[in-house]
Structure formats: structure tokens, C-alpha cells
Image 1: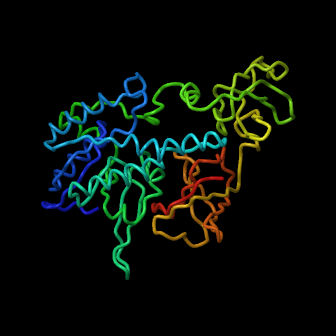
Image 2 (image 1 turned 180 degrees about the vertical axis):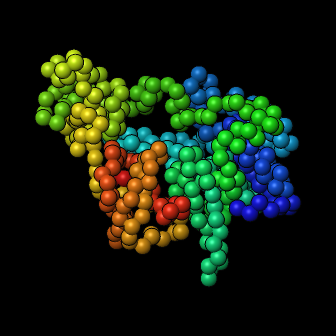
Image 3 (image 1 turned 60 degrees about the vertical axis):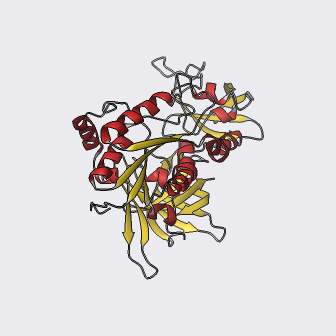
Length: 371
């Protein structure tokens, strides 16, 4: 975005108490915007636990707002989050899929409920600390907005933002998309922000650092069943298909299966390769590069395209999980609004429920849910 002064433009910044959103607020104020901070409370069930407490985050956000010199208020979206994000999260896990709640949270909370609230405060724009960029492109029908990767590709978060539409992007600013994360930390330290050295948050607030199975077990029943190797041999008993995801290797409890040891006496490394919901069977294979873990093709539905329409059939790049490199692929959409991707190189652990996100260079086109 143009780094021009905007003395009369009001921007509401989502301030989480983290360093990224804090520096975002400062940058926008430096650019001449009227900045208001908004702290979102999205989870309440065990907010006082060691794993998920927003109290310290709120205190950090308030302290930063004082240093930066902006007003801040808190808003509670816990009910919306539970209804729009968490309910879907549980439904997907119950069906044996592995959802990405961060994608849904961005679409339904941070750029819908938050955006709507910001508009009631008279905002011209909203801003967050995401690492991505928005570019306005002139067209016959007026400006068209593109979602681009951050310049710092190691921190790019466009994957999580691929469901944003034209109306949302037209109101959104991503100041951090133009600078590297190392510079963000330097700015925070130079300003003396109280959270300058605060560790980046990882994962989802309602899970935090707790064991995932422990958390999910509070909401979904355990249904133990057989854990089978590719040859049909029973290696153990799983705790319930909802607790496992494709490519998972930790927590299987079968490292030392008798008769499967290697020459040096160590056991093979096992990975989840599939689930059969009808027979309640979990399938596992030996070795990271086992053919059962590799896919040259995927089908995806529940599509969302940044431009509002699917891209033309042809060659693009895609990600099937956040931390992977772009993979060359051929794209084709069908008459039902779903799409197929065929990859030049087989992709590892393509997981139903995760997002397949399509790119044309640095431009994020949108994507869908892998089925």
C-alpha cells in the first residue's frame, strides 16, 4: 500500500498484545492515520487456565497503546467464535477430517465480526499484524483488490487469509507485509514497547500448549479401534479417529512393535496414512516417504476466490499446508464450484479438511477445503 500520510483516515487496529499488531499500530500512526486499538476476546471456556489466558494479553495491549499513544477498547466475540468457528472445528474432527480453524477465524471473526464492529466506530479501514499485502488494480468496473504474499516469504500468512473477499480487502491494511520480521522486532525494541521480546503465539488459543488429545477429549467421545499396518497386521489400538491426522507420527505408541525392529534393534518410524470411519480403523505405514503418504492429485470444495470468480484453467502453484513450499500444479474447476489440482511432484500427507490455496506468483487467488 502507498506509504502516504492520511490525516483524516480512521483505522481500527486489531491489537492482540503481541509484537506484530503493536508495531502495526505504531506504523499506521506514523503514516498519519487516526488509530484506534481493538482487543478481541474470542474464547472463554477455560480462560483462566495456564494454557489460554487473555488477561496478560489484554494488559500487554493496554501497555502498548499507552506507549504508542492510541486509545484501545476490548470487544467480546466469544459467542460468535463458538458458533462460527469452534462448532465447525468439532464437526470436522468428528467426521475424521483435520480442519484449520485459523482460516475460518480470519474469514468469520477478524474480517467479519471485527470489521463490522470497526465500521460502527467510524473506521475507514481496519488493520492487523498479518504478514501479507493488498494491492489495488484499476479495472473497467473500478478498483479490484489482490491479496499478495508478504515480502518476507518466511513469515507470509496469505495462506490463512485466502477466504477474504473484495469488500473485506478494500477495507484492510497490512503494514507488516512490506517489511521483514527482524525489522519489526527492531522497531519494537527501539520504541521500548513492553512486549518487544514477547514470544510469538503459536497454535490456537483454545488449545494453547496443552496436549491436543486431552483438549479434544473434553468435547468428543473416545472410540478406540484397531491400528493396522498396510499388510493388515494389527499393531495396536487407537484412541479414536478424531485424535489423529494424516502424516502424524507422534503419539502412536507403536515404535517398538515386536518383529518390526531394524537391524540395529530400533523400531521403524510409523506415520498415519489413512482412516476408515465405517470400520473405525486407523492405518499406519513405515517411513516418511511411503507411497501411501504421497499424492499427485487432490479434489477440493467449499471454495472461496479473492476475485469472486474461479481462475482460468491452467498452471499455477499451490500449498496444501501452511509451512510447505509452493508446489507446481495444474488447476481445473468443475461445474459444481469445486476444483482439482494435479501436481508435477507428489505432495506429502495431503489432508482432508485442510486448505488447498492457489497462487499465481505472489498473488493469492483463493482456494478450498481438501476433500
